[in-house]
Length: 289
Image 1: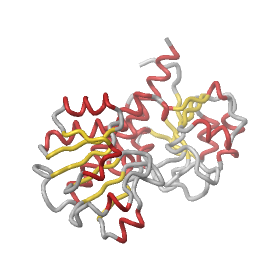
Image 2: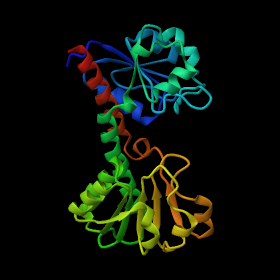
Image 3: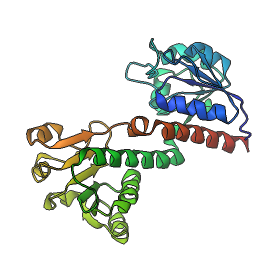
């Protein structure tokens, strides 16, 4: 596979980056891990400090997220903080891949925007990641719900990418599936899939769900709606912080909930790492043509 580069440095991150490095090395590329002090060795992969890694490679891959609130590159396996701004001199003129490009440029304005690509903004990445997220959410339901999904009354709140992936996965379990959406065309699509469709703003009229998956990035599960949820139900919130659930009300009402953030990295780091690798490859192949 010719993508124009041979040496890649993966700086910071978690298990996803380890699997990304492993997969790239298996493809025959020279791969360096930077900021992985707790990793003793990895076949076919070189281990260096973040600064040495950035200096030695043609292409730099930063993790998801690429920068935290303190301006550091998240690095689960590093014994020291990796300040993104301190890496700047070593990234000059390098091809850099990141997530959340605007946040990265705010912390490190010295980076050349033309050489900085946001893999997190790519549709191929988002769609693949949505399926991994949905699979992880179903895994949580299987572990926490004390009944079977088969025959259970299940609600998927939201019919975006993750919601669609959930409907696809759940269909094989044969639940009594209800899916909420705001748009008329989405409600029609839900009915065509054989599920019950309900408008999200009319959820107050629904009750008796055993398992609820919420994907909507806004407050949906207010105290009024939560009061209608069975005490034996499980509520899995997949929305980014602050979430779609009034968690204080959920605690008062004794509702069993999980705010399941960053599921791909927790439930399927191997696949999540390979998705990052594939997205980087796709971007470089498009540029190399």
